[in-house]
Length: 300
Image (tube, rainbow, N blue to C red; front, side, top):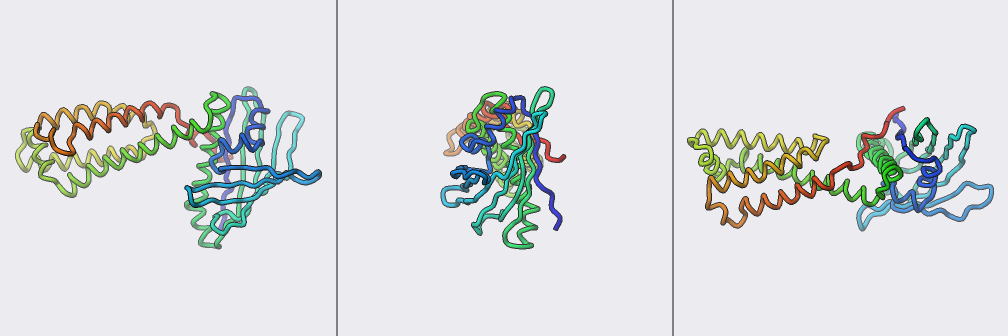
């Protein structure tokens, strides 16, 4: 099965020495590269490549360990540098068996073009190659590109990788939560269940007949499902956070005005929507200028 090597390129407005150190020194490299939890250089023997071991933890109970060696670096007269790698793991749980790649650092007029290309063989034969092509290779390519953008922001803006990753994963965790809430609220109590309280509240708020209330609830459910899908597909999450800061107070007021007694229910719109308003504010604050894999070039 023909496969495409993973290629990632990003321009970084920093000195080439800074980029070299951040990608070649283990204590710096492991901070920004999402593919590694730790990198440890082994004692170097004269005349031999620099050998190292690495780990990647997947939760508290699963960890992949591997080996690697830097098999050469080359400095051209124009300042271009490169470093070649040979890496792999003997653990059967790893989808990667062995691979090779390189880093390249090319000085440009006002920045350094930092790029990598690598490829690898997989464990478990032909079936694993199909899974790798469909799932794992795109995932590790995404992780590489995201890591490159984190490095770029670290060197250009000074925000440490740990802080960037906390904002990134917090933003998308909140994103998934809101997507679930809108999809669930649209599908279950409105489209699928057509709950009597939904019809009663909608009919009271809009002064509709029973049939009109049913149609309105169905329409609102479809709109909520579409908004939930927007949370998954729309890239500018800050726009959605700001929209919710308008929607949730309005929905709370309309609900209480339509059925005042609902305010004393155990799970009522006041407490529920207030929680969502606070989450929207937090999301709006932390989602500004989060790192993104889309800022990197993925093909030559």
